[in-house]
Length: 148
Image (cartoon, rainbow, N blue to C red):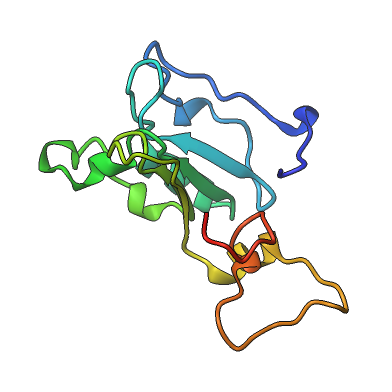
């Protein structure tokens, strides 16, 4: 969906648990998107989000946290230290149907910058009719107004 192309993706070295090594990240700039994880699918490991955000934000990079399995861990007192820095990311994705075991798919995106979120999904055409209320198509890849 991002249209980056595989030539524009760089793999950051990781430790034996799959945690990103911030000290070995490639050179970043304001056009960089760093995708960190909370809850590696194989090991459960959590990237050092605080250190990643510090390095990325110093040069204007965006940090997204894939928290499909583990973002919910942040609320546990026993996990606070290992999850330190998650709040510094620019956006997060999380699934309630994985860790919380809700009975249906429910992926969610949380984004610090409303304008960045709406511009990512913005489509325009002369026949679109905009309302004074929240138009769903500005907040998801589907142009459907149905909540699915």
